[in-house]
Image (cartoon, rainbow, N blue to C red; front, side):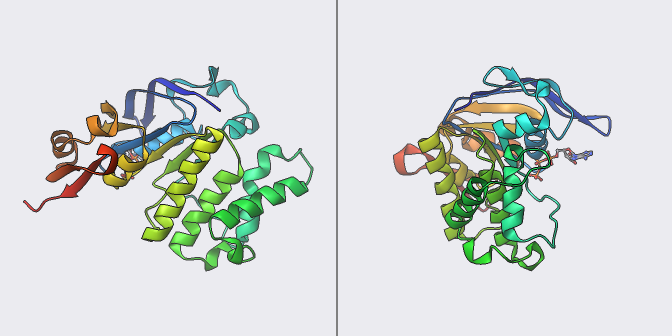
Length: 257
Ligand SMILES: Nc1ncnc2c1ncn2[C@@H]1O[C@H](COP(=O)(O)OP(=O)(O)OP(=O)(O)O)[C@@H](O)[C@H]1O
């Protein structure tokens, strides 16, 4: 169970301010969806939270500033599935997912039976067991995306950051992955932050949403507050119709101009 707080976060890349003044507060078991047009800064935000980019401002997990933690300590608190990480193509699916257990394996030590069991069970839940011995080079795009997610889940960290976790997945696997993340957050109180381009899907799963535009927070609140025709029209330059879906959650449909 972990409470993620971000205050006044900024990131400068190539001497350009890519994120400025970003704040968020995600409680145990809550799901925040970060949305925004291409280049708005969504991946940069997740990379800064994951500690792989230098940033200004504060990121706190349960009141502990992230920048004070060693990489191993941070990895036990916060797991990240990036959008397209460089993959060691000769490594097998099992060994790659097992890398998620690194923060628990002693220096110069070997993984325990428990580490292998956790890894095997994550692969099972993502339909990846039959591929466990296959090298990453010989996977489809969607299979590779699930393996990256498997590594993050094997890390068993209470804060989970997912960058576009469903882009390469077919409909069934999109549902499987999002339902699995939803079950984990309800059962284990996982704190989830995802970027998602599919706004209806984001509205169905998230408790709260944040709309980024030009590296700043343009809107935040419940899905119904953020997914309005006006905000989407302004920040995505798209014409849409927003309808109330199941449970009053907004559904966003593109409309031909
Ligand atoms: N390493 C980098 N150096 C310089 N600029 C970068 C770097 N990485 C990203 N940017 C720029 O930062 C801005 C935000 O990029 P980011 O990848 O965070 O956007 P995004 O919202 O995730 O976009 P998308 O929806 O296309 O994935 C973009 O203008 C991008 O060109």
